[in-house]
Each structure stands twice: as structure tokens, then as C-alpha cells.
Image (cartoon, rainbow, N blue to C red; front, side, top):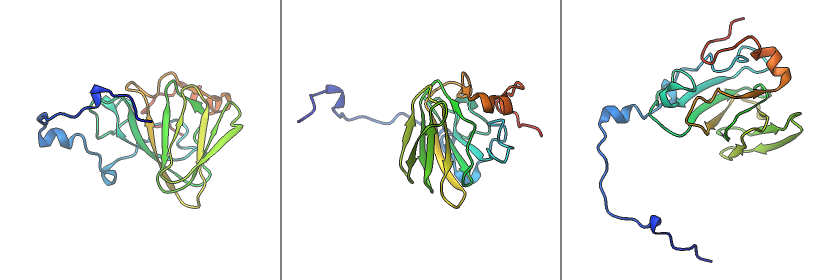
Length: 183
């Protein structure tokens, strides 16, 4: 069955808006040049939650620093490197969070007691709805990477919910995003 006609889908001739090489350079993130954000989350130094976080795209650097692409966008983008079996603190965001495993299988747990889960293979995608508690882990025998998109133009660290267990362990002492946790 054909889709109904929508004039907005028509193509028309046009020209590019001007962009300088310097402006375009500010819109490129080369993974090899990235520096990890050691203050991204307060549980990074805990062996059960240890992972590396690189922000590739963060409007005005709201998600974390250093972020090479800081131009306005409606989302933030990061890559996490995680060893087998490590899980971030169980949490929920007030926006959708999208994940794409890049070089391993990941299991995503959701719900208050992590009672449900789904396995996502390399290059598969899962979009966890706003307000749903979640955590995830690398299932393969090597350190693995997952692409993460925070579906908000604002500060992605605001209005998060943390499981009571993880809140007591990592968040109750007035943690501030971007400030590296101390031992």
C-alpha cells in the first residue's frame, strides 16, 4: 500500500549554506584523539562499575568534558568501553537513551529489580524509554565498546533517578558531574 502524498518529501534544487574549514573542524571527533571524562559518573573508580567514557558530541559541553563537538544538537553522544561483566549503577533518565554495541554483545537489564533483560548484538540498537530503570553489561570475553545517545539537548545528568542501593553507595554525598571522584 503506497504512503499518502506529502509535499514536504519533494526534492528541490538548492545550494549549501557556507561553512568554513574551521567551523567543520569543530564538528569532527576522531576517536583516537579523545580524552576520557574521568568525572562522568561517581562510580567509575569502583571495580564493579569501572568503565571509560568518552563524549564525542555534547552541546556546549553539558554532558562532560572534554567534548570535541560542542555545536547545538538535540542530543549528546558518547562511547563507553567496558570489561566483561561490569555494570553501571542502575538508573533512569527523564529522556530516551539509545545504545548500539560496537564490538561485542551486551545485555540490557530494566525495571526496578532488573527483572527483565534483552541481549543486543553488535550494531543492534536498543532505545530505553524515559523513566525506566536500566543497567547493562558486556557479555563477551574482551573489553567492548557501546555507542550511547542521550536523547536530550539539555544537561543529561539532571533529574536522574538512581536505584536506592547505588544511591547510597555513590550519589548521596553531593556528587557533581564532571568532577572526578576521589578515593
